[in-house]
Image (cartoon, rainbow, N blue to C red; front, top):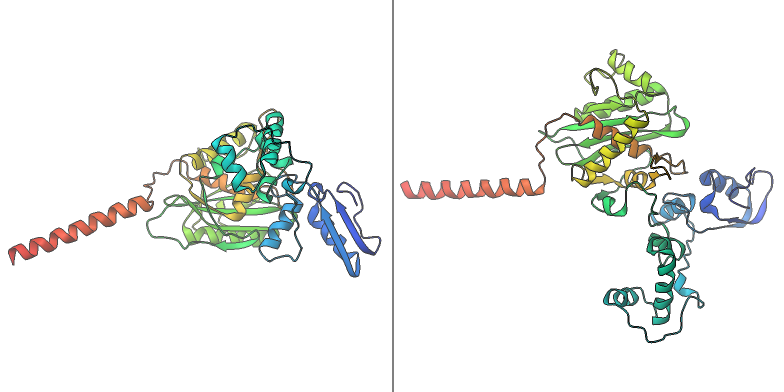
Length: 370
């Protein structure tokens, strides 16, 4: 069964099914579901593939297995296990970095020399993807990623949820909150995604995602979540967003929700505004305005790509359509014009030190005049 074959496996029952290049399946989740449904009792499914991109069908299956949400037996085959991937040891000296890499990855000198020869031809990034030593290597980002590993490496990550509502941190007194909502039709395709951002602390504090819901269900969930934090809300006005924005603005529901507008107009994405939206999010990460996100949002950020002419591309995969990344970008947009005093751990440490000094001085003074 090839990844691009039509029809799935609904028309037959099999003792064994082999899915070749599973990571390239257009709808891997559905293919896997129909495949398992076609197995006879005691049958077996084997899904093998090279890596496609972060969040592809194979990657999601591996991650679910690691989290205990699936019961696959994951087998990974690093290139060092292939005897042919080695060169005769000609006594060539290795740099300190190369020698450290060789030792830490348990390579022979012949394997290291073979690796160096390959890297000189195809580059380090492509080598890691085509000849991985780990699953992380296989899914390392390609040159087309909009958010590089260096940028995303600036973020702390806490466990989130890929669906439903996830309240990560309670509202804190004195903190400023914003939210972004990227709505969908709720008919089982793209997710509707809400992200609440604590601007003061620079971290994602709440999310909601669902691809099956009614208009009223989504409206109630978004309104309740936003009001919990007193957040200013940016809704993408295009397509489905029009109805949600007008329902809140007209007072149909969500009394007290503050909507983000510019010159009285809701945000409408165009080619130009979309580019500014993404550059604003990347700048927020690079400058430390955002320092912590949830794991589901990080997955979406990793999938955002750039095409050959420099346009931002949101690939549609079994993990979604980068909807969490879109709602986070809208939350950053909603923070525009807000004056916020960032209170990070350094700030809190300084305040505590000052308070301790004042207490100490007050104590000395009382003793002096007693």
